[in-house]
Length: 171
View 1 (cartoon, rainbow, N blue to C red):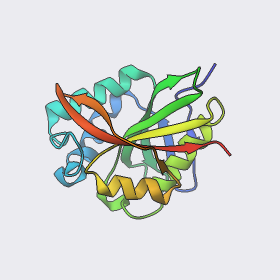
View 2 (cartoon, rainbow, N blue to C red; view 1 turned 30 degrees about the vertical axis):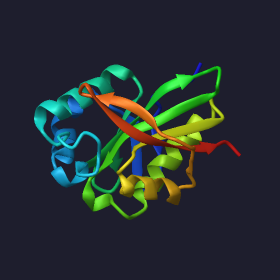
View 3 (tube, rainbow, N blue to C red; view 1 turned 120 degrees about the horizontal axis):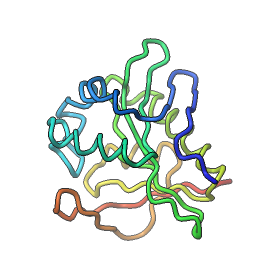
């Protein structure tokens, strides 16, 4: 059986299970509107919208907090989603990082930790990225993601949003 919420330790980041008591520090990390400006859910920096995101992560049993090893600060979050045991595929998504961790090594470090762990139970990891979220699309290319043809639609708050899908296959 797959362990969807291990603690993963990297050189600068700890990826650990998201807990209900992470709420105040996680919301503080996520309350910067610029984090969400290219995201399909641009209002996620607000308390009611972020609370829904946060609570669904805790309830999923597949979500993580990113903790900076040097300071103990929460600097982001992500989760596994939609594990398909038949296709041997899982999604990594719902990811955000505080702006002071953009453009550096944090994204590649947390993704590498999560991807390497996912490869213990699947052969392919996929990422849904908003069709106009160029920042995240470039980040996916930087870590070796290959874009699948076409678009997929996912509803957020009752509104359909188009996404592109990137995949990384187990070597």
